[in-house]
Length: 297
Image (cartoon, rainbow, N blue to C red):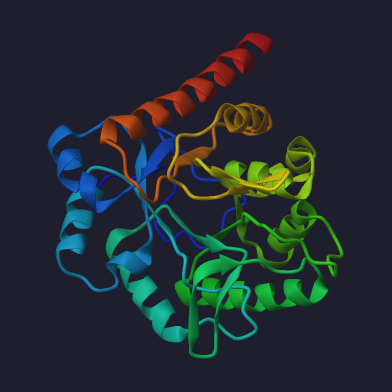
């Protein structure tokens, strides 16, 4: 199997993994065969583990692709922010995939999507206060103990803000990483989306994030919806990355060392060459920053 310099199932690390090629793509079924036939020059692939719990043909293709590329497992169903423990049946099926495919990264979101037996088809926001921090700490520690390894958690895209917020989101993410030992998956598109929706400064958010906790970056496209005299950005993952998000990404990586970067595209799938074009643009920005750093040394 392909490997990164970080060994699979390494329990905890103060440093992000180092990959020979830092840019990855979300793996989707329409592209399985093309990837296997063409062996594209891409660093790694990310999958939602919940799509592979059932086994069958999807696992077959995932195993074949894992022979050539590192994998990251990016969950959408742990519901880490719910006011209840993480479901052990979900953890068990997730851990089975970790053991089989040896991902270099395991992640989920700072959100909730389950309450009792009700499971909601969305990643719902949380108030940024001490009570939420305590609940997330409990569930992240439960998950890390069960997996025997560190996970990373992603900042969400949001469309509402809670009056009960006690701190800005970046401060909340910093504190969460500090008290749990988890890493941060910094979604730059989500930062741009919510900054527009809430009237915030995305660059102030980037400046406030503890860069030592950032293990990965996500990039994606969004959709603008006009509502009366206002516009709302919706995190649809069905568009190319827009120029302002590329600019914010370029600003972000100046404070990091070639972070693992993923291009997300989760619906209305384009030809695979479109995804590769987005990946090449991310790599070009990373390479340009690397050259700037070398020139300054």
